Length: 245
Ligand SMILES: O=c1ccn([C@@H]2O[C@H](COP(=O)(O)O)[C@@H](O)[C@H]2O)c(=O)[nH]1
Ligand SMILES: [Zn+2]
Ligand SMILES: [Zn+2]
Image: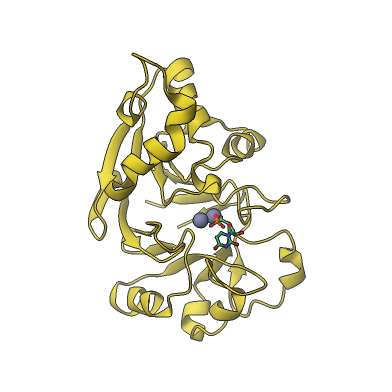
């Protein structure tokens, strides 16, 4: 069974040409939304889709380009579609997501007082595999992004790695490829400047050729086209395209 990956956005946090780095992972007629940033509703609309097409959502960390669209998703599910979808999120982030991000907009006395009033919350323990659909299995891998902020990368089906936002960790990439049969890497890529909270193109270019060959770049800036031909054996993943995995 082929899974389909469609990035609804491939942009860095403040990109204007590209939507937030969020994705749809499709297993037959089941659709998982990976992160749900501020631009997710419009990004879906431009693909002739909406939250009605989403069966579950998986969150990697608490930044607006990854969770800023959850308020609309939650309201739509509750009051328009009358569905409670599964919310997959690290157990360390559930209280933070509600108390520090969603409660302000979604709280409604007697009606919406917790995440569980909106979602079927599925708290995930890092380093454990979870079955999300018949052919989608995910494992959270804690990775460094912002000091003091829990942030997770995703390892699907013991086959492909989705960094979300992380600083460079070549040892992890080597381990996944050499020891865990990783065949594709979707990696955030800061095109210019120092990689204080992300991995830079310069850093990714230091990876061995066999890893670069299976690496697809995402979470990039508006000037991405200036870097065409300057990314070695790597490829840019394109917003809206459907990739068979
Ligand atoms: O130390 C920092 C922390 C944050 N930033 C900026 O904020 C965004 C955060 O969004 P991401 O989704 O993690 O990209 C980041 O890109 C930086 O632009 C920073 O510069 N320095
Ligand atoms: Zn981001
Ligand atoms: Zn981030």
